[in-house]
Length: 379
Image (tube, rainbow, N blue to C red; front, side, top):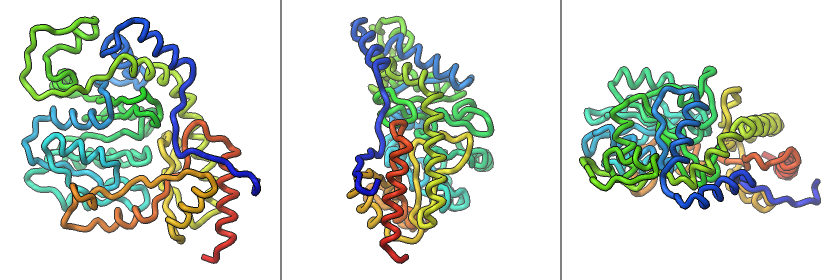
């Protein structure tokens, strides 16, 4: 093992001949836009999640967040509470809707939004809170809904990391205000690119269905019938955010594999948890929870220079990531206040390789390299 050098990717999709055949089926139909494949994918997601919520597919997870916020009809400049520790898409979706992202601190152990800090940032313009399922963690979502009820806020869940997860035995997406998923190339399931909005709010759902198609009223049903609207009725701003049948065909095949993907991800997470028990210098942020199907596996470096470990692992062929850079430090979203827990975490976080293609031998390789690394250093 010590003389072998592997290349272990941080993340990658898992597709095979099933997805290829599905795409070929769409190509052979000569109807590539939004049509029956999208309609079927929406129905199948609804059935899979056992949900009564409306399911609306769009072309990215960012589009899902953007439309969810825009169709709530807030006023320009209204504010949305959001953790600073998230992919920049969360903040960009808020600003794209003409709203102001108000960055909040996070729990130092889990990366989930700190509601004590969030409460300090409420103003007369605060209209919504966007909890992010960081590293697929949503165990504190019930507290978010209590917080939102107390302050009269809408909840838009950024659940990009959480498709196929459960909480207290119920699917994420089974209930809630507005929940947004991502199906990009490296998520728990993929449609190549894609996203999804789920909501019980019929008015918001109707707006989103139109808004994804440039807000041409009722164009969704026409597309599902492989037709087009030629007499347009447009009352709101709209976007080219619909999902194509090519993407939906990929997604439908991936949904069939979701249970086996979930089981493999849980097994992989368990191997990591067992491995990191040997290394007190590295502490998982990803939670050990039977309901969680991790999208990424995030750790914080407790007692060593993060960049030194990152460089070493990359030299050994182990790709690692940094999820994420604090959004309140970006020039575009920069705040006039500090968020100490986010800032500290962002100096310590490391994301280890995590996808269904990783083997037990890969984990053993990473373990061996970490053993060598720490043996050579007196901490």
